[in-house]
Length: 619
Ligand code: ADP
Ligand code: MG
Image (cartoon, rainbow, N blue to C red):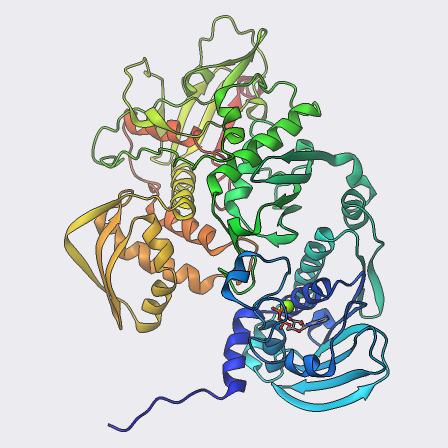
């Protein structure tokens, strides 16, 4: 057979690579702003037209480029920021992959004007579809202006895929916020279709937040401050009453880089537990500083995901620090700040190798088949006159707490002290768990409360439980597999197998073991303990479907999406009858969750009906 392999021409390779870096005008905004920051600019202007579809232009007063550098900057893997692989773990710049300008130039009309401080004259360079069209000397001030016109002009499919102007503008503003928040000492301006959208003078972090989000924000901010050997945390959380139903102002920066991290989000949310109503998310602006050697940024082309060496410790510190701030500023005067061991843990980490928290999974648990072992979970503690008092289990929410006066019960007032679920979670203790629960329409679990009753949606509750478990497994990478006696052979279309290949690693973290992935066949020799063999096919089909449907870059990472999709497939469905133990087990597990109140898709998991509301019906 004749040889058939060819090297792709550069412009094609660049177009392919561009797909990873540039999804929409906002991606261009991010890359250009970051380049300006890396060039030590103190003043940056972003100008856009038609939501960036016609023009994205960034002007900075940074160090500029020499003639040769200007030309080189559009080459793939051309960067001034790293020289060797070791440098990847000592990064102090936003960029390092040397592919942003090459990618952008492959799919747009680009003009670059630049001059270094001491050069007499600058350079004007134009590039279209990776081809240099012109290069001329030009009289320009120190610094750099890059304009990107007609994005995706040569990839109509991508252009058509862009959303409406308001949506694309929203994305741009999000990126602008992220960079501007991380660099308050830099002056920023944003102009859209000729009018000023933001004018942000150089300032400090608090002023920057207020300048962006409005003067009312100032009084909402609670400062957060902590420094340990491995982590420095600064910034603000919004007081609990300003939490939002939709995901609102939630910003993590690690070494001044905005990152997305459902795992750290979890840490902050859990610090707010008991302070916020159902389905409300906390707002935060948190700036973390860690040793550059302790993180890996090079795990995603857009550099918005980070791998921490010591994720557990960071989680614990973040949670404790936010909790502490809420307490100090009297936001949570009722929280128990007497030092208990759990609270201290973070500070003991400093030089010790972190121990993996033990999460014991009851591998024999199958809600449909057998009697589950009863969980013994420290969930809500009710406030008594003497302070905060923990009760051993959720049952205490229920009827018959003798010495408690008839206080009004609102779910938002419960103190959800979130314990890391460890140790004896699945140990049987024969306490009197004979609580009244019953099932309504094989859909809801109803249970009396001290002040009325609670109605839990069984499917959504189970989704929440599985979602947290899966997300943890994926991020913490410690799932348990059950080996199959006979490997499962499944057939998928070729593109679907490719999709599975892409998420293979994450799936393996949930407990899947793939013995083969090729062409149109998948062979599985192990599956997560949480799932039944007969459900695997459906689950994978659903997953592939969800990934295809996924809007790219919709705020949270792929791990989150994966956990959501799997949880939805695996959860106990409506119509399934549950016996007493199963109902109780589900409730116990639900309230051991970090966010028991909402499903992964943001629906309420349970509701309560107060006696007072009932009374009204009989008037
Ligand atoms: P990276 O930022 O990963 O190095 P880019 O493709 O974004 O890669 O940029 C390539 C190079 O061009 C940078 O390393 C830098 O030397 C130079 N460059 C890009 N933008 C600017 C700018 N605004 N000012 C000065 N130099 C720049
Ligand atoms: Mg860059």
